[in-house]
Length: 195
Image 1: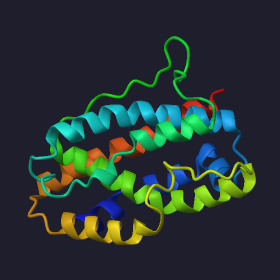
Image 2: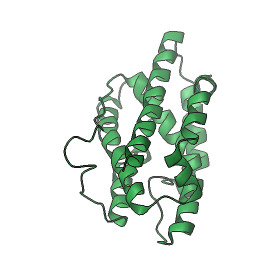
Image 3: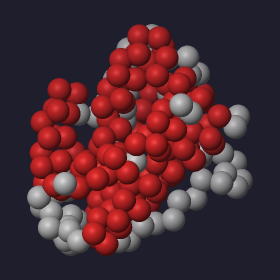
């Protein structure tokens, strides 16, 4: 099954990103609003490239029939940045080191999507902690975009990708995309911690 292969192949990266200082600040609610905004701005740069490609290739195999409109996160990131008073502000002045290469292979895009959707399980917890600690009462749209729908949406997505008849080579290409998603989370985390 593809989901099991990805989960097992990515376990070390998953542990590594969980131990990143920025992710620790998110998990315990100690992150400043400024640093949180910077992290989200880095992710917005990534999502702009990713979602542009996802829309372009949504009707191609293996993505066809799998992509749900709920999977797109740009509007949610922009809402968060607006709440944080950082809407429209660039990630940094001048060169910010946050250019993300646009992925065009639909198999790689599937791997990226797997990581993004999977991250919402931890994001749901982080959203609650941040709401309690930051005291601003807003929802944290990117971290917890699906609310009570997450379980059903994730189960549906996993069932769909596990049903794909992929070769070993195609499966490895999906993994390549998943790795690039983890790298994007790490890069955005590094960028936010650099200030």
